[in-house]
Image 1 (spheres, helix red, strand yellow):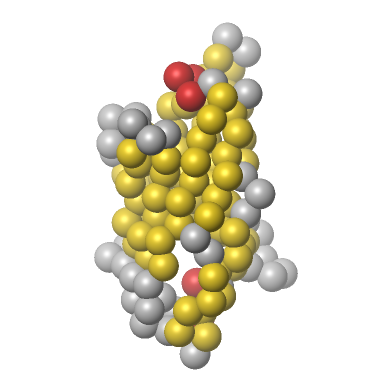
Image 2 (cartoon, helix red, strand yellow):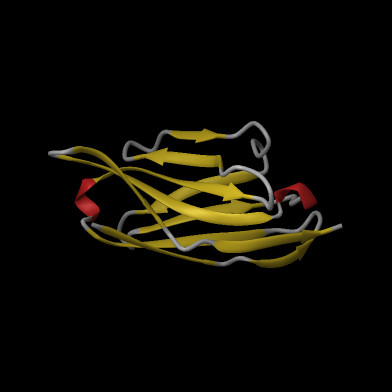
Length: 119
């Protein structure tokens, strides 16, 4: 089992910045990938960015060049630095951890943190 707790959301004006954090605990050793997803009202949850244990990253086209995902393994914490925010970035942001165990892959999710970008 992995527990994830996000923080850092809030209200910001367009063009501003926010940094999200996600503290992981539990079976940390089994995590292979971590990432951020978001869900806007009336829309499906979508991938924002992921990072593997080797440091390889993947970003949605809509955030490339503006968002940066990183992780501090010593602190078991995942980050998402969001710059040049747009109103379209308004959503609930969820932290995800993907683990690989004897039964296969499992996904764990945080409770979500609201990001609101005003125009």
